[in-house]
Figure 1 (cartoon, one colour):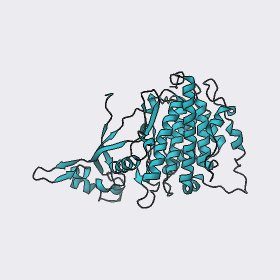
Figure 2 (cartoon, rainbow, N blue to C red):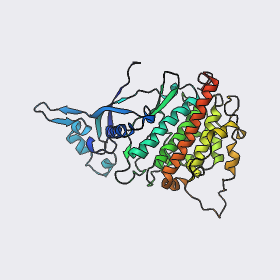
Figure 3 (cartoon, rainbow, N blue to C red):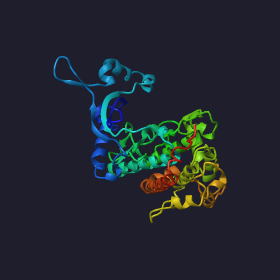
Length: 391
């Protein structure tokens, strides 16, 4: 198995019509991505390269014709009858599924096999670098960023490289209007707020960045192995009575740097370098929600400079209000909700018009964090990579 470099994926996937016209055609997306990004060698290995793939077709016994392997072709009239009934049946009609196979390379390992928080940040930066390039050069939105869709490879020198995979729910945003949020894609507890709310706002790459914040908070709270026994506020990301309730919890968590900090205060302090992750998340929230880090002049706050005057590397330093030097600066920008002279603005609506600018700034922050973590791992040798990473 160690010599294998190609993965064959065999899946029955939801489709809006015959397999060839589905806008969520992973094979077509991987073809576009592979052909476009092959010109960017610095991105090699951060996304799956298509080897071959397509719809599974079944040959008829009587002649040389072929039929697509779908639930419609299998069920025939039974499937058709299920979708043309009364209103109640229409509401519960079965979803057409098509059978696809795709061969792609390289093969990665799941995030729970990482050894440290610095490795996690490096892997995430690689995956989101691919994400940004795929949006910018291929106009493809992933729409299902979750822990299982970010993998990594351990290179011969012991370093790690991340990759973004699984484009089952991706769409090409250049073909017609941007896909609205009324089609819920994503995975609880990482689903973005407007997908939970079925918002009619256009879907943008920033929804995947929002999802990434939830992923990193989840890992920071429960560890790489996902020990859900710990009681934490983010339990409401899966424990709300309705999806709208969960959206309300998340809005409250992201509302300002102080409410956000209350979530980070429950991070597992036994994880080495957990404050590095917390500091990174504060800057990402600031840029994604307040848009304060974005400027026409390019780069925002330098990640390494902020880290260097804080005690981010010590596992013994707990995540407390004094742990974050950036908070005092952010506090000046936070306005009270009872200030009648300041209109309440929905940050998710505003940011949709600034998506490429904000995404570039988020990537700068993440790449600065990854560079810092590489230097940290070099300075500490194998100590950080072999340290405790929580339950």
